[in-house]
Length: 189
Image (cartoon, rainbow, N blue to C red):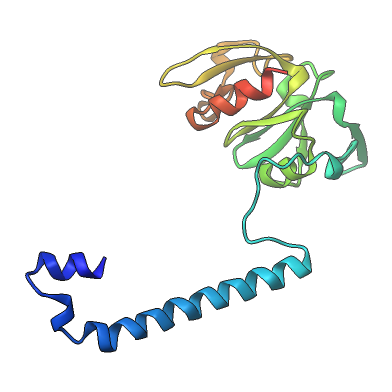
């Protein structure tokens, strides 16, 4: 690379001080960086962690069977198979079960969606966008949407009446473009 750089500016690399001074300095810098990362990698492997996060690892061992919902008056254990979806409304996270007849019955959840993703079985739940995690059993069907997105029909439907949909939920059941391929693979079992 350095030879091409010098050649582009009309210099002969062998007639400069690059080979005698700069070249050895650069080699030592590269060697020092490699030794540092080799040491860091070895240290993290001994601790059992990794620098690289593998998003495709199946997390069935850390998934939960029951999610505890804390309300003002009581704590309610909800079986994971009864959960239809999680969603965000006005900055708060809510859980809706299959038995709930409308969105007003949804339970408020203390965790954010990212923390819930880690707790839930990835074979059973999928985060379709920034606002929603859906259960496999609650997905009736999906169809192509605008701009390479997918529209998902859920049971129970989030809103029975189209006029009652809040502005921030206009795109609630839309699988984002960057997750559409993964969603199709997740649905194809």
